[in-house]
Amino acid sequence: MSIAPSRESFQFIAALDADRFDLILATYQVSDLEGMAALDLARHHCPETPFLFVADGLGEEVAIAALKRGAIDYVLKQNLDRLVPAIQQALQHAPKPIEPAEQFFISERKRIEEELRQKTAILDVINESVPTPIFVKDRQGRIIYANPATLQVLGKSASEVIGYCDSDLYPNPDDAAQVMDNDRRIMESGQMEVVEESPDGVRTFLGMKVPYRNERGEVIGLIGISNDISDRKQAEEALQENEARLRLIIESAKDYAIFTLDLNGIIDSWNSGAERLLGYSEAEAIGCEGQMIFTPEDNAVGQSQWEIHTALTQGRAENERWHVRQDRSRFWASGLMMPLVDEAGHPQGLVKILQDKTAQKQASDRLQLLYETTSDLLATDQPMALMHNLFHRLAVQLDLQYYYNFMVEEKDNQWMLHLSNHAGISEQAARAIEWVKFGDHLCGLVAQERRQIVLDRSELAHHPNAQTLCALGTTAYAGQPLLVRGKLLGTLSFASCTRHHFTPAEIDLLQSTCDQVRSPSNEPI
Image 1: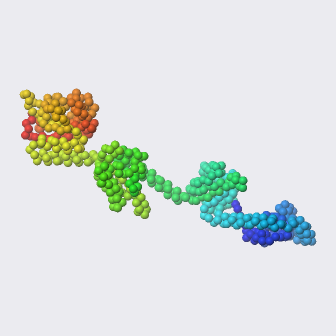
Image 2 (image 1 turned 180 degrees about the horizontal axis):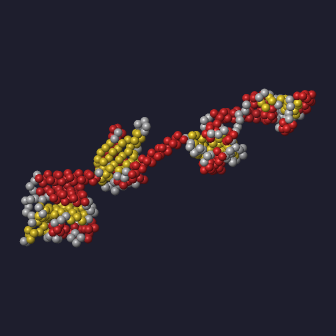
Image 3 (image 1 turned 135 degrees about the vertical axis):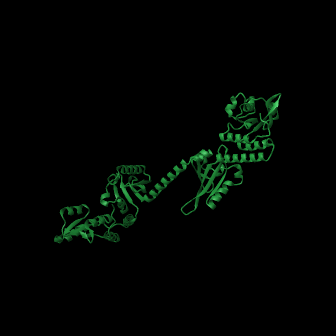
């Protein structure tokens, strides 16, 4: 550990630098400056000036040490008759006067050395007073300097730290080994590194370690400067824990699409529920505009921007509307958007939550359709005239392409099915099935068995009665008998050329609709 020069040392050095002396005559104790220290300073600053000790008594070992370190002689006070001859002899050995050019170089050297001493003194004061731990290690990892802040962190005195390695100071051997490995890597690479260390296993320090070199450019150790970030580290860990918990909650909410956007409407997070509901993976969604999930009609009127504006100005935006998946299919969703604010209340982004309400929407629409159908039927005495209107209503909801309605009528002394209403098929196709016997085609089978028949794409392809329908490109079929008090009036069939099947709820809707389409005035068979 370095020691700043004492006030007496500075005064002695200043005197040596201020003038040139023929001889330095000193007692073994110079004021508060010990004699050997004075000798070392004199030999360093003016090695050409003879140095002579006068002392009450010097032991043999001290006297020999003084001569070895540059003293020209020593005289005991009880033998002062030797003082004059000793001075004369010392002056005879004094160097000749220094030439002006040489004197210039000596003065310049002294100026540089003095500047270095002053800077060293300033650095020592800084190191001793700053609250940041500063330390120096040699090539073997031993601490050769540690400022008071470092000693305070370690909870040890200078004597317990200087000369010791981390393996002697760290309570956890694994932590010590890791620090020593880092130090070796830094010294071998010769590059500065920012490191994070925990010397006591409780506090965390973030610092910088810099290799230092000798005059030949060789790395001979490293200098470390660190800062206690324990509070920040704990806050970061708490934040990470909360974020992980929130992430777990969001990922567990698989029935909800939850994602966040920046203030410009760009998506910056995307949960698994959003991926499942909307079809985009997290990588595909992040960085895209949130308006990609809105229908073209809504985008044309700026619906997504309206939601952001409403959420930021009113604190929330809620609505139910159609949205679009990646495959361009639509679903009805209940949505909520809210701003994400910082501690000062300033918005930093937005969160959007969507729940699929398609099933509820379809059920509601079906009930509305049944209500309207019933109302229309009650308002007219010709219910079959409403068939086209009913088909168009159902076609919008169920993606239907055509329908045909048969009524039971007598022909050639037998009961047959007569095509009464149809839409979506050509007149040529209609003429081919104008009269159908019971058991023929799918509608004849419905009439014969007096039950609903529903077939999907694969079932149609293999059913012997479905050849005519397959020729029309049918991929989903539902046929219902029209019954009154158990008696058959006719049949009503619906078909799609784009869907592969009807859902159970859709099948129930078709059956319920057909139950409304019947006329007691028609005579059943």
